[in-house]
Length: 311
Image (cartoon, rainbow, N blue to C red; front, side, top):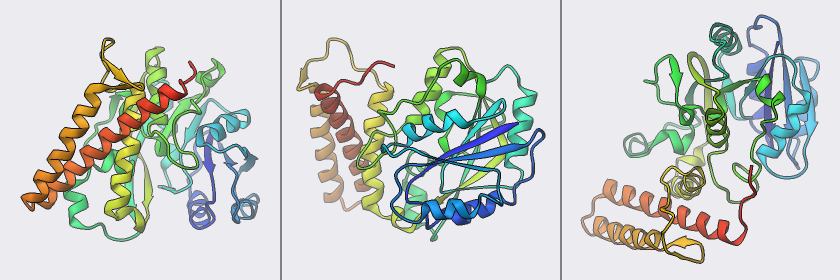
């Protein structure tokens, strides 16, 4: 048996359509259950969930404290079976999604983490500049379509389509509640942080190309301002994940490495130069880098004010 686990907050607009798609899933060998944790919704999300309790093998839980990872940790108390499949409340599964994840888990018993393909479901056609200039992976949480079937690195496993063997949680692993989606601003990369911890502990990941979901991309997420706001969260998360380690001897100002500030100044000058050249692509990419580096500065300063507890 396997369990699908997700958190939701104020999902009344899209959640009914997502759950309709769950009603079209093919039954995986051994069966499945669905656990959804409401994370403090103040709309009609609870009524939406109640409407599907007789149509799906659905268990509804509640975690009022804000934070997706807090909600997922709460949901782990209700899992059943040997495989836990994680996704989001704005993700539409293909009908054979669970069958393919079950197949991959049964075929590769020496792997504990399984990532599938995450494709876009656009609410509106994306402008050409987004497809040409924007890094779709970190901005919209979409997987690389060229990623082959086989062993995969931790940072290619995306939260909308991730399965983990239940024995990992029996061993005591949990999601870090200090990173990932919550009310207000936050550092991205919660699933990457979790899978990297598993990798460091010796658990290996496998990419299952045939397990496919579609991530709903809302119309307002196609704006320049929203995408550049995403760059700040991405920069914060990348600092937390140690993607580019800060030298131990780096001089700091209120917790921020001073060379971060020099880089930020250089980014600002690059934005000015691109605008003077009237090159819109160069200007966008320079501003993305500026916002990304500002996110790193912000995370370093916030970590200095309130150090992250050890995991």
